[in-house]
Amino acid sequence: MTTLPSADDLRRRAVDAARRCGVDLEALAGDRSVTSPVTGRSLASVRWSTAADVDGAVTRAQEAFGQWRTVPAPVRGGVVRRLGELLREHKADLGTLVSLEVGKITSEALGEVQEMIDICEFAVGLSRQLYGKTISSERPGHRLMEAWHPLGVVGVISAFNFPVAVWSWNTAVALVCGDPVVWKPSELAPLTAAASAALLDRAIAETGAPAGLSQLLIGGPDVGEALVDHPGVALLSATGSTRMGRAVGPRVAERFGRSLLELGGNNAAIVTPSADLDLTTRGIVFSAAGTAGQRCTTLRRVICHVDVIEELTGRLTDAYRRLPIGSPVAEGTLVGPLVHGAAYKGMQDALDAARQQGGEVVVGGGRRFEEEAPDAYYVEPAVVRMPEQTDVVRRETFAPILYVLPYRTLEEAVALNNGVPQGLSSSIFTGDHAEAERFLAADGSDCGIANVNIGTSGAEIGGAFGGEKETGGGRESGSDAWRSYMRRATNTVNFSGELPLAQGVEFTV
Ligand code: NAD
View 1: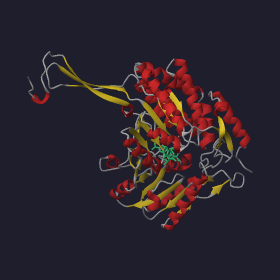
View 2: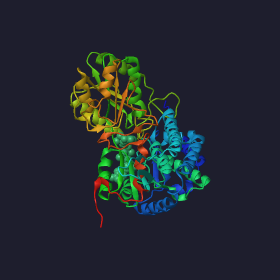
View 3: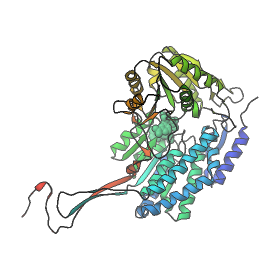
View 4: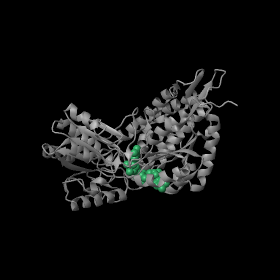
C-alpha cells in the first residue's frame, strides 16, 4: 500500500493555498506544467515570462526606486513589518506550497517560512541601524564621514531547494536599504513564488509604498540571463549551482555590475575521539539526510578519527535504517522525495563512481515507491565508506549521500575538510576545547560557516550566510550583509573658512 497522497488531492491543496495567499490563478495560468516531486504528477500549469519581459520589469522597478530611495529607512521598514505579519498569517499556506512544489517535509517547509518571518524582523530593526562612520580628519575644521545610500534595482535569482527563504533574505534587506527587487525564482517552484510575491504586493499596497518595488518573472535560465545582463540591475544576487555562478559572475562583472553569489557546497564534519557520539550521530543525521540531502549546507563528508570510525559508522547505519521515508506532508516522515529524475540519476551515478573509486555503500541508496509513483523519486539516504577523498567525494552531488573518511591527526582532518573546491559550511564534533579552537582558527576550516558540536546545516538568521571558493564569496541576510545592497559615499565637510590641503600639499595661486 502506498502512503503517497493522490495527485488530485495535492492539486486541490496547492490551488487553495495559493488562492488564500492572494494569487490570481487565472492570470498565472499557462502551458508550463508544474510537477510535484511528491507524486511526480502535475500540480498546475503556469505561464512563463520570456527574456523580452525583463526590460519592462526592470524599468518599473527603476521608476519605483526614484521614489523609494528618498523615503526614510525606518519608514521603509513598515513594508517589511507588514510582510512579516502576512507571512505569519499564511505560514501554513506557504509551507504547504513549499512541500508540494519541492518536496520538503512539513516541519522543514514551515521552518523555511519561519526563516522568512525572522528576516523580516531582522530587517525592520536594521532599518534604524544603517550606520556610517565619522572619521577624524587630519585637517582642522573638517569632518569626514560616510553615508550609505540606496543602490538601485536588485535582481534575485533563486534555487529550487529554498524556493522562498532566499528571496526573503534578499528582499527584506533590499527594501529597507531602499532598493526594489526583480525576482526570477526557480522554475520548479512558481506557485510558492507567486504566493510570496502576492503577499508582498499586498504589504506594499497597504502601506502605500510604490507598486513597482516588487517584480516577479517566472521563467527559465534565459530569463535569468536577461536579468544578469540588464544594465539597470545594480546588484545581481544569484543562488544556485556553481555551474550557474560560473556563467553569471563574469557577465555581471563585464558590465561592472555588483554580484552576490551563493553557490554549491560540499560540507564536512570532523569527528574526533572525544566527541559525544550520541549528539554527533543526531547532528550528522539531521544535516546529512534532512531535506533528502538537498540543502546547500547538507553534510556530505564525515571525516572521522580512526579510533571511533567503526562505532560511528555503526550508529549512523542503525539510524539510517530507521529513517521514515515517504510523503513529505504525512506526519512522521523525515525524508521526502528528490526533486526530479535527474537528481535521482545524479545520485546513482555518484554511488557507481564511489564504488569504482574504492568505496563501500554501507546502507541506503535504493529507491522507494517506484511502482506506485514511477515519476516520483524517493530514495534511501546512503552512507558510503571511502578509503580517501577521491574525485566523487570532492564534487557536490545534490542528493543524500554521506561519505565517511578516516583520519589520524587533526592537521590531516583539517586538510581534508579544506581539500575541496567549495567552501560553504563545516563543523567539528569534539569534547576538546583546544581542538575546537584550532578548527575555528585562521589555519583551520576555510569555510564561511564553521560550527562546533552542531551539524553543517540549519543556520539561523542573524549571522552572515555564505561561503568561500566555488561557493562564490557572497554573504547574505545577517550581520553587515546589508552593505552589499547600498552604496557608500565618503563626505568631507570643511567648516574652517580656510582651504588646507591633505598631505600638506601647497597649491596657492
Ligand atoms: P541551478 O543552478 O540549476 O538553478 C538556480 C537558479 O539559476 C534557477 O532559478 C535557474 O533558472 C537559474 N539559472 C540557471 N542557469 C542560469 C544562467 N545561465 N543564467 C541565469 N540564471 C540561471 O540550481 P538548483 O538546482 O535550483 O539548486 C541547487 C544548487 O543551488 C546546489 O548547487 C546548491 O548547493 C545551490 N544552493 C546554494 C545556496 C547557498 O546559499 N550557497 C542555497 C541554496 C542552493
